[in-house]
Length: 280
Length: 183
View 1 (cartoon, chains in turn blue, purple):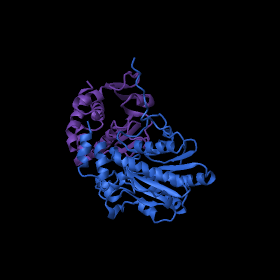
View 2: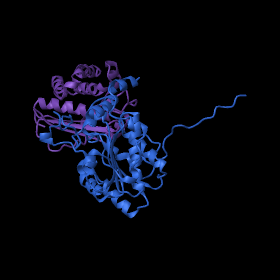
View 3: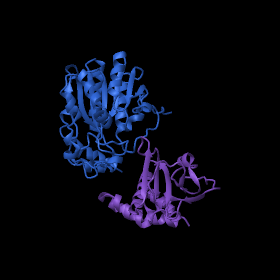
View 4: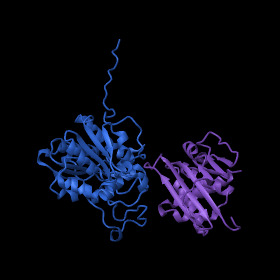
């Protein structure tokens, strides 16, 4: 008799992610970033010793999705709440998960001061250039010319100001130990994003100071386009304005570039067509 | 109410993605083109797709004192959860329009009129399930012509961006189809 084929688990839900249905729109990249954070909570065995701070914005229900303890902060105040928590309980791993409206508009003061103080906390910053939850209004990160419900003719920098590059802004401060911008438009980008989030986690675990990873994300619903096109839109419109790179890497976090990173360079041409082909 | 005075309150409810907010906006914009006083008040939760959404529109010949609609003259219900939540928010003599494709129960009707419209199925048949909202609107306007169909068409042209211009045609069909389904 032939032996039964042995089953081997090669992919499963991270323990740090609750087995619940998420409320995010079809094609939203929040799910990918949730998963990356959860995988790293698993990797560093932090589920029982981490506290996450949920934002106000589309990510508000993050407290239902992560299996660690979670706190909902007032709009934009996640870095302040994280600061208090980490100072009272330095033994805990503290991360905030915030969107661009939360972090770069109403919470900009908390963001900058937490970074300047070098608080030993980690922030995952989702930048999709729009207020998704409230109805697609202009955000501080909305690109020049971008149409939103409050800039129906496109954002005019003369009238509505210029988009804010958060990583660049924070990287001139002395407090940050790790600042990086990534995106999740392709499997390679997702792997690079995971490396960045891992480095940000390590910064806190090694007590090096403030760490932040900005993830250029999509909003198919509010950009008014299908998910595949929204990923192309990130590459074609957001990446040129918000360059993908590491801005601050504290010495203990430096590592030799992987072969993949060395060969990365700019995204390949014809990305749109390759995405189209990937669709059924 | 004196002769010539007009006041009508509409509540539309469904889930995110069904076009509840847009249906209300079309109604409001149409009433504006007719020189009415209008309040349009959409309300939705943190989820843009799938979460509960409601939208109220008040159309009046006089200035409107309160934007709040407690009991509606007309109630448009797009899904079952919204029927449970808003089904009672209707005035005696009012009109309840239910999307019978997604709502299998027949609401009791003693003091108000019930109209069942298979809006989602009819929208699919027209080629795009997303025009179910306009079908519901068409049904409402046949029974309660609070604005003219011409004004709604004008409103559609007004709120439709260039990039969406190709959707105008199916929406015009949906508006007409909604009227046909009432009788």
